[in-house]
Image (cartoon, rainbow over all chains, first blue to last red):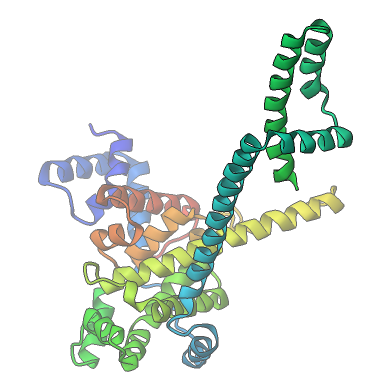
Length: 175
Length: 201
């Protein structure tokens, strides 16, 4: 015998006559035997019929007038395009900001490489303002270890310049 | 829905919805008026059953026509106009339900912060309280309100608006088999909510 779950899963198809003959017969036999499923079948059929003849709701008498007013005040045909142009505007600003960032970063890095003296001056200004603990600790240790050695001093200076140029970009970004 | 369309078509010299929207797209505003006349009541009935509130439903129907007016060129003839307009209305109604849920959540949240020991009265439909009552339009609406939006949408379209399963699949944008099983489950849920009531055949 067909199970209750199977019958309930095909109940709508059975009511609407969408099943083939063997499926229809199997459900018909089940409904004759199973009181619970038969009750559900009867209820669903009645609910479906009730929904079909349920009270229809209409719009108010002012509907057309209100709609006309909304069309006049709220939306011309082109108004829906406004948000799109705003979004294009915003994305344009974002693209411009990214381009500005890339261009400024490239030029500043180029300037630093071309004029190491300038970057050194900027670095010294930075050191007076703020000294990050991790940033200067490595070169300072190197200075102590290699004190007296001219060659080592120049190595340290190169390292420091490289470090300086990295920091300068960040300072300019912060400004 | 077929019945409604046929009735309206006979009074409008058999002009199809697709012909009307094509005329409207070319600038004929009278065609828009005819579409409003044709669809305002069926859409009102659909949205009212979905939201359970007449004022909100009318607002959504107006918004639907406003969208149609502003976005007429988005309609392409590959879809039936009726399914297109019902899709717009459905989406607006679902958005309204989500907003309502959010409003309810925030009002309860605000309420709980101030009055912690107060019981919130549950005025939702309870079959036990309504036992042996003859089913009425109001009770069936309360039962529909208890359904989740996905079940509510398909049962209204199928049993009240009389859409075919294929049309529902197009409006809801789900496969035909899913529509059929969803309609069946929605009917069983309604039966569960209304089983203690006397349903007159």
